[in-house]
Length: 344
Image (cartoon, rainbow, N blue to C red):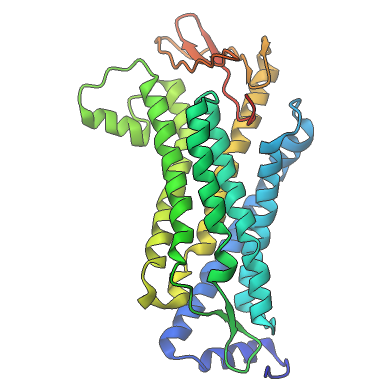
C-alpha cells in the first residue's frame, strides 16, 4: 500500500532511508547521472532546432525513410530519457506500470537509432547487395533483442512510498546491450575500412595504417574530413556501448549499477547518430547551393570546391548510379556524391 502523497522532498528522503546505505547511494547516484543526461539531451535538442527545421522543411530532397527515422528516433529517445528521470525522481505511485510504459519505448528507440547507422554504411558501400544483406540481418537482430527489454526489466516501489527503483534485471538482460554494441562496432569498422582502403596513400608500416583506420591520421584532407564528420562520433558510441554492456554482465553489482549507463548510452548514441546524419545532409545541401552542378539521380549530387595543391582521390563507384567521391586537387575540383538518402 502506498502512503498518501505529502511533501515530495520528505518522501524522497524517507524512501532512501528505507534502503540499505549502499543501495541508497547507488540509487542517488543514478538519479544525478540520469538527470544530468536529460539536461544534456534537452540542450542538444534545443541547440539543433534550426538544423532540424531546415532538414524537415528547407531541403529540396523529398522526405523518405532516413528523415522519418531521424525524427522518430529523436522524439522517442527524448521521451525515454525524460521518462526514466521521472521514474527515479518523482513519486509516480504505480512504479510497475510506469516503468513498463517507459520500457516499451526502448524497442522503438534503439532500432531507429541503429537504422541511421545502417543507412550510412549502406550509402558508403553504394548499396552493395552483400553489405545490405549482412547489415540488414544485424539490424534485425538489434530489433529482436530490443523487444525483450519490457520483460527483462521491472519497476518496484521503495517500501510503502510512491518512489520507484528498478527491480532485479532478468538473467538475459545483458543480451540487450550486446547486439547494438556489435552492430555499431561493425558499422564503424566497415566504414573505416572503406575510407582507408579507397584512398591512394602508401603506408610505411601497419602502425600507420592502424592509426589511419582508427583516427583518420595520414588520410588526405578530404578523406580525413569525412572520417572526422562521422567515424569519431561513431567511435564514441562504440565505447559507451561496450561500457554499458560490461556493467550489465555483472549481476553482483545490483540493478542500480547495472543500469547505470543505459540511459546515458541511449542518449549519447542517438545524439551521435543524429549529429552525423544531420551534418551530412545539411552540409551537402549547403555546398550544393553554393556550388551547383549536375544532379545524378536520387543518391548523389556533384559538388565542386577547391581543396589545395596535392592530388589525392577517394573513389566510391556505384554500378547503377555512378555514385562517387573523387578529389582532384590539381584541377581544383571535388565531386562529392555521397549522401545518406537511404535509397539506391
